[in-house]
Length: 292
Image (spheres, one colour):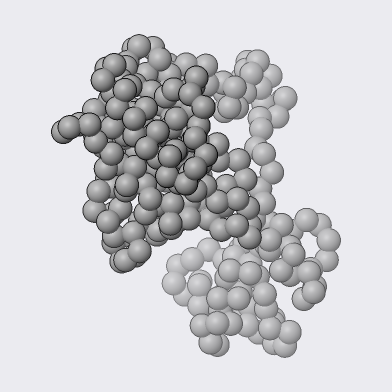
């Protein structure tokens, strides 16, 4: 059979309408000959209704939407758990953050970037702990009373184009920096005035002994023009001192946008340190022990 036909079977559980049984048998024989257990090779996750050609795409999409996973009441009773250790509200402080050598490195890199300057992107799969590390950074800055102002633009409904949602533009980032660093100032509304105001506000704050870090979560949804503008924010200076550190936090799509092959953002890539946050595959047992 063609590669396209095989891809439809593997990725979408879509079979030819003719000779389906023969094809299944040939595939089963092939897998068995290569030492692969085939008892459940062709099982598909279904919602209990019949599968037809008209509903295949709908069911494939539905199967990708996993519902929220929770511990059953019987499970919590059996293990003497009165709250779900995996729930978001189980994170009450830095002592609740699970760490591995990789996580400790990223955690420290974030703090050093916030405290001393830099431009970094933390990239990882959903659930790898990126948001936890962002919260940990803010908590650490507050606990240590570090002279660091953390700036977080609002990212609700942010998308990388205005068709799917609302793009985060340089003007919105400038407003976030001004309102966080100098909350009593009225933001000027002419075309270039807010950026001159931004530079002055950062200089005044820097002269008062503060460092500034711009943290953008869901950065994989940043449009390319905004990524290019971040380079100009990063280059703001007061003498030899950079006025603004930048931390981008996003999923794997961010790595594609920051690829060295993407000529549109080559100047950003040259200045940005990309740090990968791997999944917990090799530390799953330690993670469960820590949580429980």
